[in-house]
Length: 116
Image (cartoon, rainbow, N blue to C red; front, top):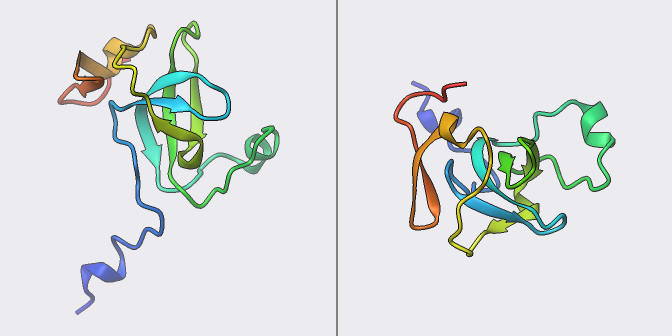
């Protein structure tokens, strides 16, 4: 019999952020909220190579709704993010698609999948 450990739980870099966590980008300075993640960068090489900074791909990457951006989202490497300690909510038009509320500095996800 093949054990589960042969297929699962073999990530090298632990994930630091969860959906609903408010984060701060260390390089670009923006705040945002995590709405999704990948265990490693899933973006195409053309996109990755066009970026000014190219953090390692073999770490968690996060889909982040960017605060006061007019509705932009971004894909950011874990090494470029840190927890946002301001305790303030994020201003983004799609917040309600993903979250039902904001409490203690984090967003509370809907029980079901996002509503677009």
